Length: 239
Image (tube, rainbow, N blue to C red; front, top):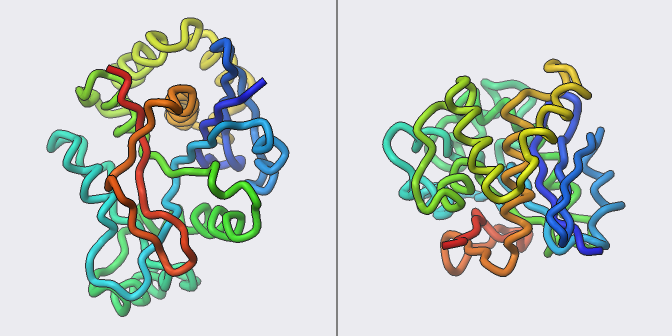
């Protein structure tokens, strides 16, 4: 049976939610992104919350980041932070990575971006070797929630109780029983392994993937980086 996958990086590795054609969902933890290889042959698409295509020496940030930001209100725009340049991946410290990014783009690097560079590198290496790279596409969870919620952004921060509940309500709309699955996931893993919002972000990726016939991306025609990877952010227009 065809699977639809959503993944988000977490402290323990990668939290993955899988949905099938009947709408049934399950979850698992991948210690490394290489383990995704076992699930891609049966997957229609795997949507992952991590920058994939990266700028080289270019002063403009990725067009997909700018376009994604436009779809969110002022209070949510900052959640789409600029992806690092490929140059910055070689930095061994925040100061070094930021300086490399500045040399290539004219801009430094935020600590938030630096914190996910190991995950970006892991996915970048994987995309260079997997024969299923066409199935692995980038999402931003807040844009996914915006699209699934009728082009209305979430009101509350995702780490707040109200933010958790409003996002869970969107997931329940598309996958009845989502609350039960999320509760089971949170009971299976400790918070030092996977955060509550990591579970929701992976889940909205899977729900978006399950609407693969309605997938859109920004920009309409993605730019490609020097390795041929598309610089795009994917979401599902369901209305």
